[in-house]
Amino acid sequence: MFSNARTSQILAALASQPGERLTVRDIMAVLQDRAFALLVVLLGLPNCLPMPPPIPLVCGLLLALVAIQIVFGRPTPWLPRALLNRSIAQTDVERAVGRAMPAFRRLERVSRPRMTFMETPIAMRVMGAVILVLALGLLFAPPFVGQIPLGLAVCLVGLGLVERDGLVVLGGLLIGTVGLTLSLGFVYAILSGIETLF
Image (cartoon, rainbow, N blue to C red; front, side, top):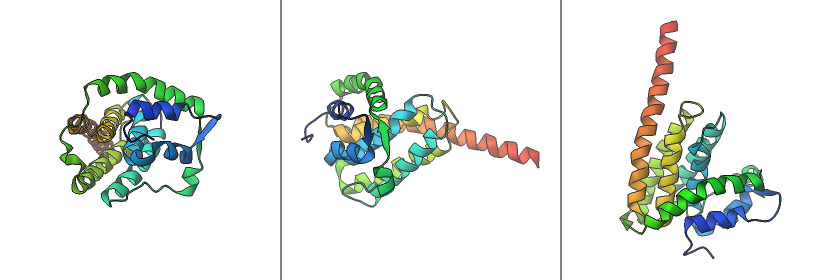
């Protein structure tokens, strides 16, 4: 159904699902054959805006779970049954997709398959390791706004994988470097503060 669809079309289909609540299982069914890459996008989206704890922590943990599976070459994502049965209000899904849609559509206008060597199995495993590093960065990001560069990076990497555009992936990695630097600085500041207490 979505083999040739753009990211924005798949997200629009997700936002138009019937019912008041949408389970994670429903979301996985919509994502179908591009579930891994689109899960990366969806887990990055909440972190593109100022978010209070524990949202970056939860997204980071789930993203790490997805990344580990990419590293080990699983064909489809595995998620715990308890998580698959969790649900989110359809209105929240519509709101998040609505905010992200203009940016995705602008990016899709200039995005095309480039540097497709990144689609090889080995390259995908390397990308899984990179996504895992970004996920760990989310776990230690400064609260409220510190996760925004990492959220943008994760979204761009996921979008680049969906659109088969290696240039977009590299752009995400560049932003991710900035985000990881902020997270490392935050951790260093905390550790330095603890040392001064002793």
